[in-house]
Length: 537
Image (cartoon, rainbow, N blue to C red; front, side, top):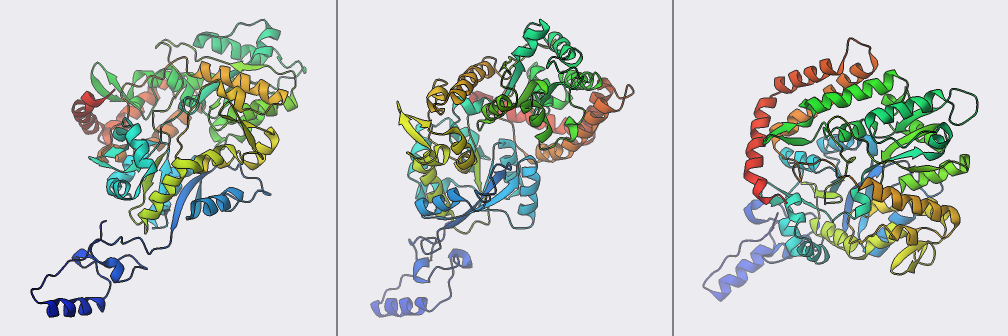
């Protein structure tokens, strides 16, 4: 909100002096009678003065708690990088961690109890849209225009971002563009040494993938004489099934020019049928539906007990898990696996849209000027150190690419820090992975695999009919209500026998969609599409 003081003009010089004297003794009031921000003087509230100039330079920001900070490094709230951020930015930054896998639920609780941080961020644009319709966040156009230098310049150089940041005609978030390595969100890997031992070819169709998984289950590929291998594990198995069938449950698709919600499509039923088949045939870990933090899946992969791995690509996770596998099974030979074709076609695994992280401003924020200054500092220079560490300690520059000096030191001291860099002016080429990695043989081997894996993950485009999802209150409400219903229905279809088929599950989801007002939401989505399609690129 813009704070200004009404000016009173009088004809007499004496009257003007008297008015000024009287005004100096008034309580802090802004235009319309509202109190000026705490900490400002009455003089600071005068017309033309910055109402935030006298406030402490303090801002709080959310953070995904992924359990990646070792005890001797500290906590997400207090560690070497939080101290460095405060020292270098000049902003008293407070970190508010939320569990990664329950982030939105935790943020919702904090917002409802008026304890949410000043800056709230998510990868999910739809979640920011929900906060807009709920009135939990505020427009930021004026703040960026008045207080920003670095980010304002960045946005001018990347004008295509503006459409993603705009809701109801106003800008409600900031974001920077993703580099290629963060567009690739999911990836798949397979044990080539297991394929070779069993005389199998790399699967290219879903039927072939199922047959390979059965062989991994039954033919003792690790050679220990025990039936203890798990064919397929990962943190995103159902998302992979859905992406390969072009039917993500929370995405909108154009079907013959009509907007249709992913969870209501026949193709989504195909994904549920695949999930049921894999589970009932023992081709996945029986505990994967309850493995909420994916610790068991990662353990099965890194200890050499799994043959196919489906998981998130970013933050070096793939390389870290593969290097951990080599420590346990030095002869293991994991290689990237392309998404396989299904009866619905061949599609890529999930890939992100252009914006990286959406950072929104809590409507209760006390000092938006400090928030903008902090974000400017991040996009200008802060991100570089948070992503790579300290030059000379954690990396050296090689051909304008930061190269790690010690992989283990980086993993312990820096690996958790990049997520503090919610804005970044980064450039990237797949070849950079080889330069960036530490020079030891294991790190270089992992980087070479990572380069190939990234190229494989990006080889097939994720099926996305519209660049970003619509946002309106009715849609947000029905999505919130439908999500747990879909999860419960999937669990029944997968685990509770023949009476709960994928056909039954899809019909139940469609009934619930309709009961919750899905027909109206589809009509509104169609209106939104017709009104916006000319601007889609």
